[in-house]
Every structure is written in structure tokens, then in C-alpha cells.
Length: 357
Image (cartoon, rainbow, N blue to C red; front, side):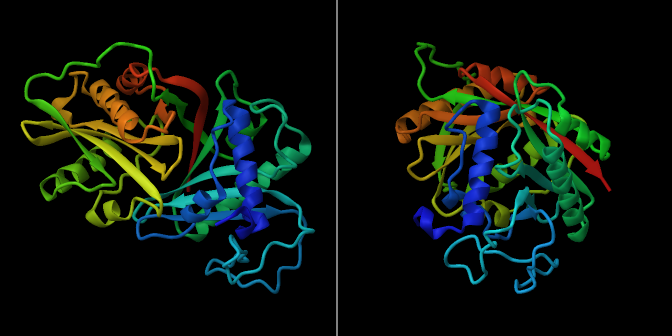
């Protein structure tokens, strides 16, 4: 599809999101395409994403069909049966909400409209910017209660040097608490270092799988590792919201056009750890998924070995990829060590604010 195939509302949402992320990270490659965003909005059996558009005033939307929750439906692309957003509507911002079936919470990114983006991320906000921000907070709370969820996690990007600004204080005033902070950054796929990576202890080896094509004997152990990762990864003061991994969830993880590269650590042939990256086909950027080592095999620097081998596989199998984007909790010391061992460069922080109903 070409840019003309997407609605103005979707294009403006993607633009506002990309500008907000790039202002925070200082990285012009920190962006997503309209194609990727549109694909992410298609519901699957294991994930549902919704973008709510906050508008000023009370525009006449009586001709719009309504969702089961009562929201007017607008088009995302040219093939949609729904109309586009009227040109004279002022957009305050967007609520990008994601839900996993079986989970308690809604994960959300609040994105101010392009006319309300702050000049200095993490700095003081104008009265109109705060008014728009409050509308987004009210919007995600109304949505969360409408879908019957019991908690909200708002993921909010800030510069590395930024402290608590007006937007963060507004969340605190609305009853949210800062539960976790992640360091976000980039792992380069090339390195001038001659280091060959950690030496594996006797009995350990690597196998590599593309696009989740793993042999049957490894499928259940991999699912158990994914569940173990969700149960064990540091979440700070956030409510732990674990959904066990099933074959159905595994089979629907990759979106159309998405590729996966997974390095699996085995101990005498038995799955003991994994590290995975994904990218959209042909992209020069990849995104780190999880890196996890089975509880019985921790303390041997195996996460660093997995990260190093994964970067090497990316170099060889996806040579056009220049950067791997990743995020890690500030208090996750073992994973920070693993990331720094492969030249992790910090670019920004993400604060996660939570509110429980």
C-alpha cells in the first residue's frame, strides 16, 4: 500500500507518534510506518489494539457507525467501510491501547496531537497541552472500565536527562503511581571489538530458528520459557499480569510481513534459554523481544552469550539491519550487563505509570 491508501487520521496519528518518540530519543530512525501501524490494528486471537482519537468540542458524528462500546468508527485505510474524520475537527491527541486476552490490564501510550506536542519533552507544559493531556487520561480510564479491565499501565517516554515534568505530575495527581522505569536504546549490529563473546560451559550449545519454525520437541519448552520470562522479569512496583503462553498465542505472534530470528540455548539438547529479535521484512532496524535463561541455568553469564550470538546471527542472516532496538528495566542488572556486553547505547527512558481500579 502507498501513503495515499491510508486515512488522514491514521497518517496524522503515525506522524504524531513518530515525532514524539524522536523528540525524546533524538533518533530519527525511532519510528513506525503507517503500514506497520495499520497491520497492528487488525485484531488477532491473542492481541487487540485500538486507537482512540480525542477531539475538541462536540462535532456532529451522528452519521458514524458505533463500535460495541459506543465509539464512532473512523477509517484507517482506503479499503475501510467507515468514513474518515471530518477535516474541521481539532485533534487533541490519541490513546493507543493494547489488550491481551486473559490479562487484567490495558497497556496504553498517550500521544498528543501535533498541535499540542511540547517544545521540550519532559519540560514545562502549556495550559492547552495539559488540557489535551487530561482528555487522554480520561479517555483511557473510560475505555478501560468499558472493557471490564481492572488496571491501566501508561507507558510514557522521557529524555535520559529529564525528570518529572508537568505531564508526569498530572498522572500522579490523577491517582497513578510510577511503577517502573525502563532504559531504552540501541544495540549496533556491527562492532569494532575483536571479542568472540562468552565461552559456553561444557554441555551448552546454540540452535537458531527463523519465523518460529522450531521442531516439535522444542515447542513446549519454548512456551514454558516465555511464561517463565513473564513471571520472573523485574516489573518494579507494577502489578504482575502473567498470561500463560499457549500454542495458539505462539502461532499468532507474528504479524503479516514480520520476521523472527531466535537463538535457542540448549543443554545436552534440552532447551535452557532463548533470545529473539523481530523486524518487518526488508527493514534495516530490528526490535529485541525477550531474552531469558531457565531458572536452573542462571548465574553463568548465559544471557550475554545469547545476546552476542543473536547479534552475530542478525549480521549474517539480515545484513541490511544496522540497529536492534531494546528496552530493559533500570533494576534488571543481569540484563543490563548482557546489553552492555554488546555495546548497548542508551537513548531515552520509558516511565510506566499504573492505576488499579
